[in-house]
Length: 249
Ligand SMILES: Nc1ncnc2c1ncn2[C@@H]1O[C@H](COP(=O)(O)OP(=O)(O)OP(=O)(O)O)[C@@H](O)[C@H]1O
Image (cartoon, rainbow, N blue to C red; front, side):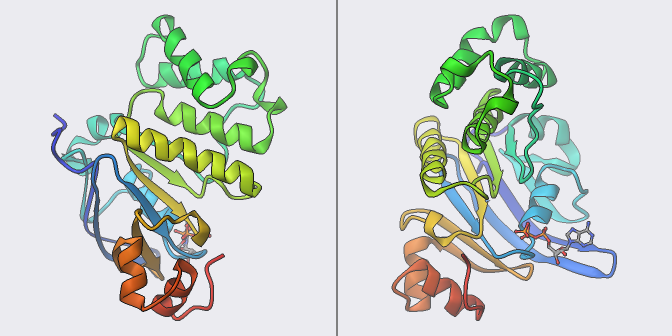
């Protein structure tokens, strides 16, 4: 059973290696309910590998991952029921309508599609796509597709949302609209969010930040605290000082 007072996500002592390539080194952090946590790292830092462990695409052999107190290794099925995910690559069916894509997701989660009409309408309205319910996903813009994916990821009422660079390739306005949509969900519904990005302008001072670099967590705390720790004026400068690299984007 999930523990209501447990953090949405608890990662403890997790390490991982591909054959002959260590990628994650003793990673520990928590994402409490209702907290927007940015996983900040450049290409190759290990963000997607960490997500693959949390979603159980890969088995976690070193360390422990808990979702709402449920151990992924022992109680994976129930733990994953509390999880919503937006992967880096689009996973919508382009030839189905928006509504059909959402109905399919409900069926995968064991929800009765017959009773899901109101929730689907609400989700589409929240994503600003109410008028497009019957259109094929192929007819949507990149930003609209991403908003639909986020709405779908939240449809079954997860307590933890993982988003792996969901704004890549979008213009600034679409990016801001999507982040706002997620921040609001986090605030209003108490969902814990782990948001992977390499874009420093997606970080706000009040956010929780995990700075992942070459498989190691170099910083864990508030964005404000990261600036103080690095003696930096902004996140870009803090990133550069803490990693020794010139730049995240
Ligand atoms: N299937 C794989 N086999 C071997 N090495 C891999 C595999 N997938 C990723 N890697 C390596 O693991 C490291 C971390 O990759 P990962 O994709 O987790 O990073 P990332 O932070 O998500 O990067 P990006 O922002 O580019 O997606 C990289 O050095 C990458 O080359």
